[in-house]
Image (tube, one colour):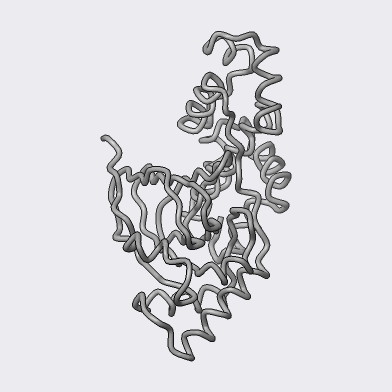
Length: 267
């Protein structure tokens, strides 16, 4: 099934209105099947939330996977593209230039606390118009909570070389693929040494480590959806559950089970 180009969540003139109300809210209509939004940018900063599904975000040279229940912050003026391979249900908040200046200058993914989530839920019911005094106070709470939030290590730099990007795309589609550098080098017509050197230079990590992080990013929505740690590990190409747990802990700073419990689910 071919990807469908999604319509804008909000009137583009509002997303590019850097001044005016502190924030505008927009909810996405649940989409079934692949959906994509071509590379674009806004004068306003954008906070994206996922209710259901998995959203791929390309911003600058980095690539994120946004699992349900998480948030992604995209600063104003940053070109980005969105892809939901299997459909997506989510929302966006668009922040004024003044508010965005108080928020992080780099894109990031985070997990919302209870206060932030409750404030966002209320703000999503607002119309894109001037805020009254109570709404303004709640909008300020949202900004303060975002400023205090801790980013999650869910970014994955993408190689720029077109041949290396073939490898990155193939692994993104099949993260369980365990082929070594030599096999990938033969596939794209370069030497193993060239592939290893360029991959390190363009992504900041070796191919093996890059693939491990990619697998962890793919594991998050599976775990949060209720898949067991063992099933997730085996599906992503690990020979043992313990090997997957070790990689997950190295990347996320905690075990898969603890990560899922901290998000209010069970593994």
